[in-house]
Amino acid sequence: MSASAPEARADEGGSGFWLPGSFAAQAAVPVARGFTVETSYYHATANTDPTLNVTRGSNVTSGLNTSSNFLSVTPTYALATPGLGGQLELSVTFLMGNYTAADPGTTFSDSMTAVGDLSPSATQKWTVGAHNFMAYAAANVPVGGYDPSRLATTGLGYWAVDGGAGYTYFDEAKGHEFSAVLGLTYNFMNPNTAYQTGIDLHLDLSASQYLNDRFYAGVAGYFYNQITGDSGAGAVLGPFLGRVAGVGPQVGYDFSLGGREGTLSARAYYEFAAQNRPYGWNAWLTLSIALGAPEKKPRAL
Image (tube, rainbow, N blue to C red; front, top):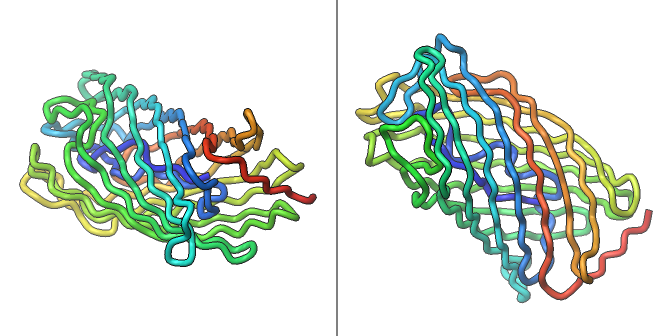
């Protein structure tokens, strides 16, 4: 299932609006018509090299150690009437949780528990047999907890827009699945710090196999690369181009709840090849339930 990015933090702290790993298994497969509610718990532990200076709001730290625990809720409405020859899905992600950051050079730490920014999105999907295609656009609305004087914030502090395209090969008869979603993020100037993060390129990947009519297992990965430098008076460390890759296992289970279809999935990523951003590991636990009229999709294995 696809998931909207539930966390947004500026490259001033070594990470960006797009949360790598947001798209995973069956990313381009249309959801059930009507309302679907997706709830995700996200945990991440990440650190930078303690010799690397990092800008975080109005602070410059010697390294950065972070811990994230967020809960996101994403209601999605899939229009019953086909649009552009496919299905249009509209969604918005609501976020709340805790973000903790520490400067290992001074042992100073900060923690914030608050709501995060809103992330509305629109996705158009098309299906031709086992081939599924998608185009999406998303945005960050800076309404979450943000204070440029603090190391820890749950909001971004500025607007951002993101868009891209994806593909899923899903053979229901054999249970084969492969997904890839490529996107670009444009970050607007942070008015609190006069810092503008450069354009980010991100790729999310998934490969899985249904082992029976309900349970699948596989591997997921991502690559994130900042392709233009940071700018503005607040970018005191220069372009500060960030990069990271991640890979790990994923599992999922399809079920029926009161006649409504649902999926419970989990995935985890180990990060490597990082540059100018914290890296470590992160994990997702996601529950998705279709609230509209049941749509039977028997799978013959």
